Length: 236
Image (cartoon, rainbow, N blue to C red):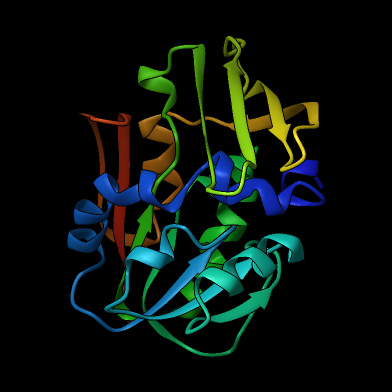
């Protein structure tokens, strides 16, 4: 478990504020379809879910500290702790969404296990929406930064450094540096290395072969490259 999703989880609302997701929401709403029962796998701090108020939302995440953050933001949502590859709630939903937590699936086997989970929880014809941070076909290494502060003096800033994709690999190394200022002015600096999955369009289409109406789109958005993968559970 990375510290970002453990003891640093209370900083998440300042590192990546819910307001930063607003521009993504219209395309997500269009992809998810009419309001209904929604399952989010890898829901993290609940920042995406906080904008999808028209849905009856069930949120699943592996990290209990992140679920605690989400419970404060989304008290009207149901929260369940579990791994997106193996959790079984034994119920069906109209749509399943996996946002950037999908990046922690490093192999095709990991992804296929998650897709089995999604299929087990979707109604016939139910919608699957995947939002990875990038796709191998158009991937470029680089750096980004961000963060925010609250009205009481707490502040967080981060630097993200995404390395080169090595030939034959399906994951890349990402270095993060977090600068965290407490209300008393004390500052802590934390460095973490994360490994993130990265797949080609052909790999996604192959992994989604048991679904129908598969579309992999890559667009330029205000927040960067927008990858959106949509599919439907086959009617059986």
